[in-house]
Length: 313
Length: 313
Image (cartoon, rainbow over all chains, first blue to last red; front, side):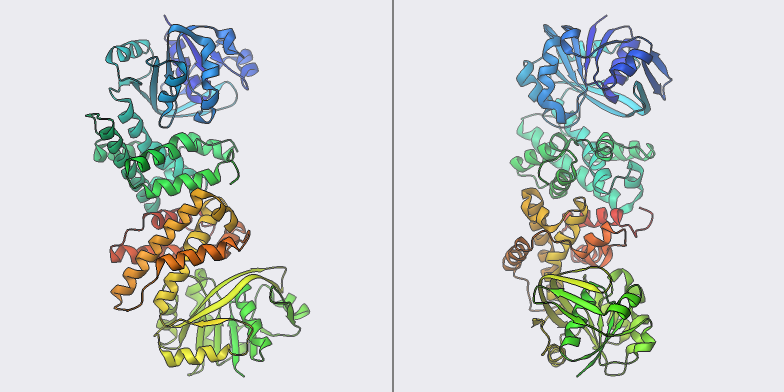
């Protein structure tokens, strides 16, 4: 049994933390907004794999009250990345590992820079999860998590996969964090982006409109081109198989129904959207690599303008 | 003195019609929504060139009541282009000429196909004009009109320029309709488009945000490339001087302040926006010519999705 701190217990953090608790791990959730609701009624997961509840989960308002653990599961929004290290640090012992289930590019590297190289992992969740009322999580579709290590260390990957061994979560081993991150962006850039920029529509509206579907595909092609250039520049032998990945993204999204990605929900609810990690950082990286990403660049500019948490725009 | 029917007396049609009336022409306005207000209080122009009013303008609810005239000034939205011929036809005599002060590409050609080749002109207004309360037009900035002929006939152009001779309107002779239309799109594509797609912001928000300004410039470059390919394909010797046009567009727009283009106002007021003529038609034309316009294409897809008057999106 491992001790686990869930820092950033939004929909994704709560769901995967609850799955670890269900598997018998000692999971402690850092909560702010939902503390009282969860203290009173517990945490309920309504999942397409079957509902379950943690009646009396271990919860805290302060990471110091959680203290050092074996694993930190970080589900913060990248818009809170600045605060992540301060929230995680009270939970660190020398051997603590940190799994960031977050979107975007460059996340693990930044966490590793503050928290210590080698202890950070990326969790790439392909799943449809939304919050319901406080203390209730709706797990609508999918759920698999690709796991990668910031140093691509196979022994570290074994350690991370072992954590999930008894959990009702399909985990896959991702030998290359960089490749896994760019592949994930093949979904997040078009769908998190276009659902907001097209006026606040769901994924079904994108895949069923021929022009928006074509825009989504063209954005994916830009992501693949930039990702493969990034892998080459990093001297990695890995490459993204663009055709296969793009086909898979459409197959999964076509079956998804009218899903609202997290960025869309943040936008519709007036919260800051993850412009930098999902859009601006890949654009900067592509530009440095000399790869043209005209659509992604324009989308990033529009989203920065649309960001409810944005600056002067 | 010429007789003039203003069909589509929105902000632009009313303004230029009033300028012709001020110059002594017999101008008759087709009005629907604002008929009663103008019948009661006349038409008032609040212009940065000085205010003036037509106390008792000739107005009609039906083009048949206007009857045949020397000139039709068509200020309809391109979203009403289907109805334009039916509205204009009652005003036609054999020698009647039609000046379309509208946005977008292919407008004059479509009007010429229904109304007769050679009688149609394009008026390319570079001006900041909005409606105020019914019967009041705010002319905020600029005001010049480039005049082109659907057949690029110099004698016809003389005739059109003569109409404006005594009017307080700066008109310029545009020897090539195709070139003039693409140059106009260098403004309309980025500014009518991005102000809507960036969430309903004014032109100042575009030119002062570095990323959106860069997007505007990149969109202009796509328009120039497509326009020059279109001119070449039409065996025209004319070319757009991209650097000069783009520099001029930014100079003019930087001085414009927080202007709201017509498409933005239509969008904010829940009316159909001119997606087809300003965005989709140039994209189709570029695609036929083999010119890549990735940003314009994505912008067109987003705007079709955002269009309050749009279809299933």
